[in-house]
Image (tube, helix red, strand yellow):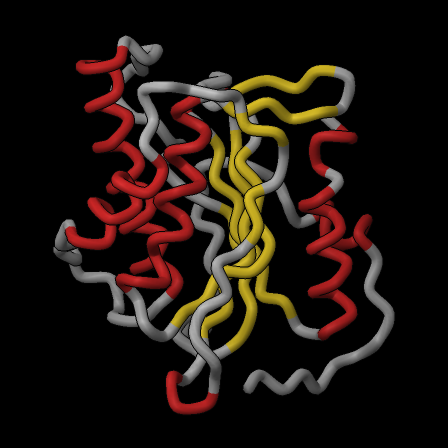
Length: 210
């Protein structure tokens, strides 16, 4: 169970100022990112290309690559027993998600999360089969601290990139140059329940502010 000590006023405008998407290091210095708590993460596609769908009249329409991104995100709780997924959304050129890191003995099984938006029908996309495949495929770490937020995001980036490459080869998905995602990602340590609920609302309303 995560306990928050700071329950003071939090405004989305304050949080938004911290969401500056650039390539410099965005980690909080000397902070242990394996600590229990909620973390808000944002990943942007390389050059902000819209690989995952589109927005029309403030509604989100995901294509097959966008559905793949959401499926892999949900599969991560099967790989990492000390995390569970909270609110998240796949946008045309970026991804927002909340991860809770917890202690297994103190929590219930992982919440499957909530994939936002209307998903376009795609006959070449087998939701259940792909999820099972991602859960079985081993992931080999490259030195990031075990059980940390960084390790989870490494796995997410690697799995989605490899799956997208297969989609380019087998399903004629739009190709990308060198990398699918930008080199770095943005994280925000959520420090209160009020802030958590504000960020959840921000994620849900992301298509409306596109």
